[in-house]
Length: 320
Length: 100
Image (cartoon, rainbow over the protein chains, first blue to last red):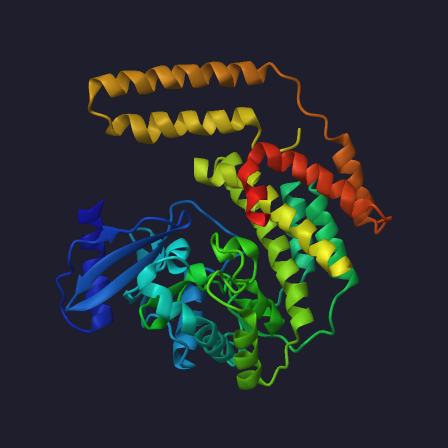
């Protein structure tokens, strides 16, 4: 598999880098059931090849071609992202793209805990706001293939699963009844949370995983890292387990002029929890339907009840 | 049936994992034997669960339909919470402690 990958990559990397290259032995990195990530070096460049996993089709995520285009648009807009190198339509029968392999921590549980990253955590809230402001300034015309999504899309996904989940249903009901005035839609990352960042000792190094990018209310992205599951076991730090929301929101509003209010974050924090509760069910479906057999996916179908509990707690808070 | 994966489906996924991913990596014959015994035991759990009747989720489905129709009388959240807590005590009992 490794030798084949190296052989398949050689002509593509040569074309992308503009010279004949001899790639290092590609290493398949852990994690990511729907996408493969291969680490490979060529001509002294640290590269990461993101390739579709076999036989997996997701209707709610971008194709790798579109994801690569969004990455390019973000790079052009000055967002800290891995440098995009090139798209490969057929790499051993599947689509892929090549980007820079950034150095730093990407595991959420370590980002919120590691001693060496204590200083990084102090600056992360403001840095996260700065990158998000740049993302939300990407012109819609630059990525015209992105689709606009609204809360209603979640109902559809839940109905596709077909299981009765009263807490999710109640969350959706509250979101319908209490919608804040709509803001102009912008390009959103769609999965903007600490677990999708590369973090080094000086803080944010890059924003990864653009497959959920779409067009939506900017406050949705601002609130997503507040979701309790994305605090990675440090629930008292509401912003992704790393810090407080206030400096983050203040910096974001200062840069965008959007004046997102704290009560909007409450709304979108609940929406983020509802989205992830449904996400747990759809992940388990991948196992149950035989698309992707795995204990990790299977157990998510049961662990989603943790998110449902949080939905209840948040509903209690907004009702008080 | 509700609560997917069911206990039986979970047992099945562990059997697949042990047989497909763990067993092929074990070279120590003693350990290999014990993993096979553990898989046998899990197979018993799997078949015993198969004999159980499916959980009745009619009440939960009725509640979901009512909320979808916009009928949310006072006390609905309490009712939903009781259901969630009961499921949480099975799926992740330690999680409640994180709320203190």
